[in-house]
Length: 283
Image 1 (cartoon, helix red, strand yellow):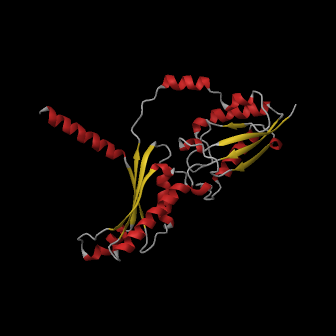
Image 2 (tube, one colour):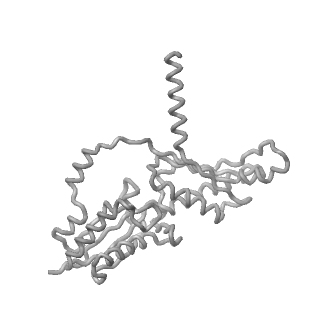
Image 3 (cartoon, rainbow, N blue to C red):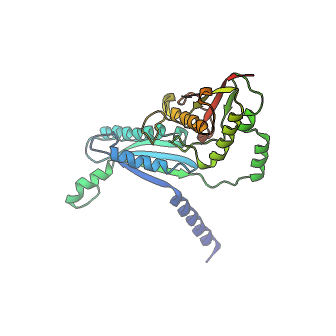
């Protein structure tokens, strides 16, 4: 086997492996409709929840119609279907920056099938296709990361220092699962140390501020557990209740949700956050 053939086969194998890593999902619609059916929305939300642990490079959303109706009508309807899916992604903390395509492709021509299957085939053509492309694995410089961790003070260390009214402390290492008010397991140890520092600082009063990422027009995100659009408030309340359990006097705290009014920029996971603002420091 010559070298060129070997190289070609290796390239084919790489393309095949990468394509296997792409995640796809289809959402189906009623005739002439772009509103998402409840069953289809449930399937879509389950798909989105499975993206939480994936480092996404891009998301493509393509809308389609069946072969009935004028081309201009089908093109508009297919775009409306694609836009409807984009809105669901946004409401559930998937950054719009990751969505590279939101395109209506118009009608899908009916394939030659047995007459009894025509209605079923047309139903399958009234859809939106979603393609999620993960980022390739990156090489992490663990030595550099450790050096940066040493240089940077954590929230619990800042709480032990000098504080004044108006100081804002971002809980940078307290990360939330996309669409939920519960923190990820890796953040529990850090949150416990913050709670301990607050118990010791009995003279400090503060407001817990909850935030979300990626929604449109500074809106709040939907809490997937309760289905309510109050996720930023739910995150702040989760931290508030946790501190009470750990011994922080609730009279020293209040909590509010700030929706997506103050995005940090950069990685969306850091906008799924809580902060505290110092409101009083006693003697």
